[in-house]
Each structure stands twice: as structure tokens, then as C-alpha cells.
Image 1: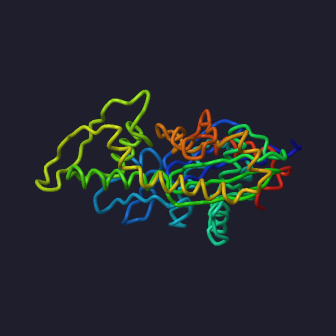
Image 2: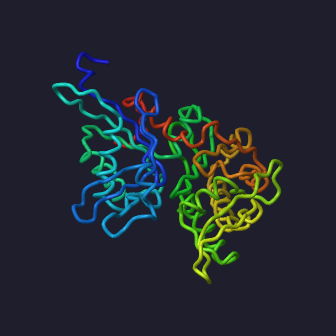
Image 3: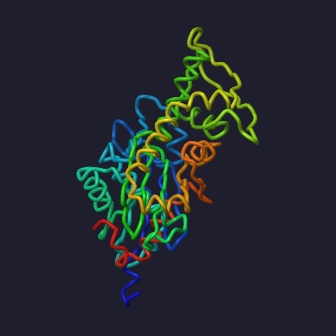
Length: 340
């Protein structure tokens, strides 16, 4: 650290479709849902994160809730800009005579286009960052899990987030081959909403679908430690009257089966693209699961059955990408795989 290091604040951001995590000095300082609420008349920000999430689906004409990120990329540039600004305000940067300049590392999906990459960079710069570098999500997840990504050893990472599932084979500090599909947490929520409408004639919202997924979400109908049935409240399609019913994990496993099968197919495609020497490494090291989707019950067992490879779930899958982004920030000038 130099003489004027106090003039620089280092911030690592996992800008996720569902949740955004900000880390400073290896500590999570902000962990909020990626949602913003605005006043339709004045266009002013009313709330960001948990407070805005509480408003979602319950607003009147004057208030609108917006999720600026969809499918892992920025869908609404202005709202994303406002959201990042508010998240940085939550960091509680000490006020000095000279405001500190922000040095940021932000993680992005591996399948992002140049235009989408530029949008992330521009948003961070408009939010006050003086230096911005980007890191791909699978690479950040691998670092966060504790893998030495600079070694000449192949490792396969599957990061199932809110908007995208990132599957990558990493070796020597680079992504050798990758597969990015826009089937992840949001798509699983839509599967649950559709299942409840079709099988139970009930309308439910995205928040309720998320709660169902967390409570009884499963990738297989045969779990060793099954969760208890979950009470679902929604609106009856025929009568329009609010009602409650209970769903089992087996029902939700059926609801999620189609999307999870697509993730399985993407994993097999990524394995088919892997060079033979790295495939040999993966046979021994196995597959690592990160992201919120890694918490779906039985997903590791199902993937292990499909690939015949050992599957490991990260210790803290929700924060693996954020931790990896923070570590990359520490070695800002050493990691050549950081996108300038």
C-alpha cells in the first residue's frame, strides 16, 4: 500500500441477477436482492435491495419495482446505474476532504457479448469507479471455492446463478472451454409458477415461487432427508379467491425436471469439448458446484449419476463468486485473466 492508499477504496462486486454482493477487505458489507423501486412521477429511487423486494408485486401505479439485470446481463442501464450507486452508498465509505477513488472488480457471465460487457463497465464508471476490471463468473467461483486456478490442472466449475448457468473448464489461469445457458434460478421459478397454474389451478408470484424452491426445491424424487411439505398461498384461477395448499418436494422435482435436464445436457456438451488431458484431470478432481442453484436438493447426486464423475458442492455456494472476486481484487495486477 502506498502513501496515498487511503485515497483509494477497493470494492469487489458480484452483480447477480437475483442478488448483489459487495465485499471490502474480504468481508461481505452488502448482500441485497438486485431490485430497485422508483417513483413513477419523479423517477426518484425509493428503495433498493430488501426494502424494494418487500414492495415487489404489491405496488400501486405511482411506484414501480424493477430488476435491472436479466439473464445475467444489464437489461436497464439507467436503473442498474442507480442500483450500483445505492449499493456503494451502503458500503459506508469514510468521508474525507478528498473523496476516495473506487477501484472495482466486477464479475460477469462467461457468455457475455462485447456490448453487454461495455454496459457493465460504463455502469460502474458512471456509479463512480475510477478503475474497473472484470472477471468471468466461473473463474471467480473457482477462486472462491479455493482452487488454484493458475496450476496446470483441469477443473470443471458449474455456477448456477439467478439468470445463467455457467459451465467452464479452467486451467493455467484461463477458461479452456465453456458453456453458458440462460436457464437458472429465474427459469426454475417460472417452472414452479407454471406447475402450480397447471396442476393446482393456482396463480402465484415470483416471490412465492422462490420461497417454494428454497423450501422444497429438489432435482430428484428420491431424497434421503426429504423436507416437510410446504404451505403455498395464492389465488384460485376459477373463483379468484385466495387459498392455501401444501406441495411436496416430489411435485417440485417434477416441475423442475425439464430445466435441470437442460443443465445436464449443457454439462455433457462442455465435457465433450474438453481436451483429453484436461478430461483426465477432471476424472480425478470431479465437478464443483457453486451459486444458489447448487443448493437444490439432490442436484449433486443427479449430476454424479449422469456424468459418472464425483460432484462437490462448495461450502458456501451463494458467496463463492463474491469471495473469488474479492481475492482477484487483492491480486489486481497479478491475475492476467482479469479483463481490462
